Image (cartoon, rainbow, N blue to C red; front, side, top):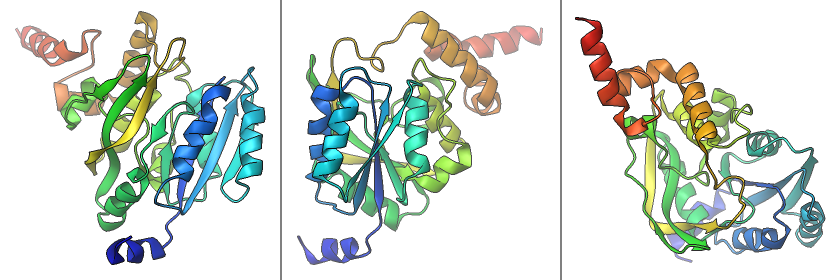
Length: 267
C-alpha cells in the first residue's frame, strides 16, 4: 500500500454495504467474501433477508457468526428490495452506502477507489464503475454515458453505486411502492435532479450475475407501465426540463412525442 493510500485509510470513513436477499442462499457467501476481500477495510455489512424460503436467513446468520465485527442481519417478511434496502440503510452507521444484491460481486479495489473520489469531491453525489456480466451471460456490460437527459429516459447507473447516507435521507430513500422493480432508476432521478455530479470509475468494479428466475432481472410490460406512471407523477417538473414533458412507453421517443404534442397543441 503506498503512502497516499495509507494516509487516506487512516481517516477511517465507514462504508455500509447493504445486501438485500431473497432466496439467495447459494450465492450469499461469495458476495459477502467479495466485500471482506476488499482493500478498504472500514466497512460494515448489513444483510436484510426479505422473507426467503430457501435457508438464506440461516446462511446470513452463519456469516454473522464468522464475521461478528463486520456483519449484522435483519430478517423481515417479504416486502420487496426497496423496503429491504431502506431497512438496512436506516441502521447503517456509515457515512457512505453501497447497495449490493446478494448474488453479485465487487472487485477488491472498488470500495477504496470510490470512497476516495467521494471524500475528495463533496460535489460528487454518486460513484460507480465499469461492470461485467457473469453467470448465464458473460461479457462487458455496455452502459450508456451518464447525463440527466439520458437518465430521464433510462437508467445507466446500476444499483451498486456509492452515495452518502445523508442524500438517501434527503430524498426519503427508495420508493417502497415499487415492489415490481426499477426502484433504483427512480431513486437516482430523485437524488440527482436537484444537482450533484456523477463519476464513473474507469475500472471494472462490479460483477452482475445473470441467472434465470431472478426477481430483479426480469421485466414485463405491466412493470414498465407502472414505473413510467410513477416517475411521471413524481418527477414531471424534472422531465419537462429534460424532455419537454412526460415519459411515454417508447421512452427514447418521448422528446419527439412531446415536441409534436406541444407543436400541435399550439395550433
